[in-house]
Image 1 (spheres, rainbow, N blue to C red):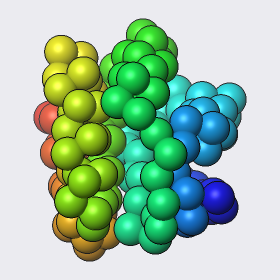
Image 2: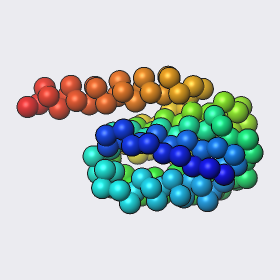
Image 3: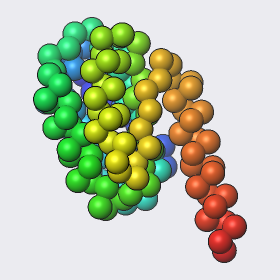
Length: 135
């Protein structure tokens, strides 16, 4: 397992390579939630396109979602893009999307990083336009 991350202002791109398991998802959460940038975050992108193996259950994906649901109270306007090429993993992370749909966070699965970036940037721009119109 290898986890790389890059902060883009207050937002983050996390790339996981090798084996995806609960441990690596918890490590990603620790990086995100322990940083003061989270309070101002607009989006998170998880890039799972370089995953070779999975060792994660639906129960563990639900646990990952539960941690995100708990974080909603500190920042309720986050967009989460998950980039997955593996059809089986797509099915499994649809559970995450279902778990998160009752929160203010907008979560979506993508097949490529370009579409995920475009969606996140579009959402961020829309949010900025709304804030500017209120000023």
